[in-house]
Picture (spheres, rainbow, N blue to C red):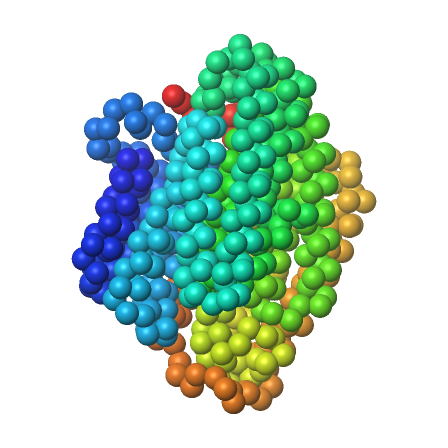
Length: 486
């Protein structure tokens, strides 16, 4: 199946570019969406098939944690694909422009799939760099001056980060000379042979490099600009899947550190950076003016929460996985809905958007529900993940940090809530806005994602619970559950 999810979307991308047809564009999008959702489900139930590519596929495999993150990517991409149908209409795109957008979107998703499925650290680095190149084209897709600035900022900062990650790989190669391999399975098996000094140095560089793509403070500067300037479907993919893929790359490095017995060093860095990300997000939320940048800083906050949870060890790991799932679905709903708001009001300024419920009640209620989901109001699942994280602090003997964590969460919720409720209530102001409303496909993905989140929060399906648990076992006590084979 790994060959199919890497090769087939690229074929669809080339077909979309070559044929330059609206029908082909939509078929390519929907086919890829079905593929990305069906493959992880089939893989979970033991149904598997390959394209007979032999040794090539030894570099791409599903393990338990990779399957989980690929499943998230599939759900997010499906929502983005359906919403894109309305995006095309709202922006009156020509067939050629549609073809370019679809091809770039598919190439970006393949790059993220490569990160998730890579069995070799060097190959993972290559695909992380590929995500930068493919997504940069999407950020600039609407060709505004501000989007050009955001694109170059994104390329520059992420390229510096990736360069530092490459230095980390070199340092790890020096420290693991006796292992003689960068396959994760070999590194994990011989972790005790890796020189601890070189390993710590390598982790520091890899953390900064991958942390840049994750959007962790203080190396997050690209994220608010890129997320706010990209088309809304692209913003959803950036927040819902790109950050996760880089996060997974860091988890694979963290697993090596745990197996080498040096997790105290890495856990300290993870927890410190997690709190710094929460602090930056909380400060910004108190003076937020642009609703798409607000969502971007919410991503910084949530990635900080996930990193922090990983640093708390086995108790926090299940919370980190649940947070990853809930954040991706919630943020996808928010960014897609922000596209509706931008279309109807013609502005990203919070102060210029009022009376959303009166202007478009469906968008207004989706905006409110998505906000409640992302901040973790019961019964949405982020409430559960945050509860588990606070519990993990107490189990780890760091109850005072739980109080600090809770304080940051309250500040972010207050700041974000003030902006959201100001936008939805009051009289509508539409002096210079487009009067037309989005089509049906601009509402269906968000409603479907919110229903999924409610089901997860109220009565999580056993199959999903098992998938979460198996993903969390990847780092539990260095067990390496579902370790990637060669």
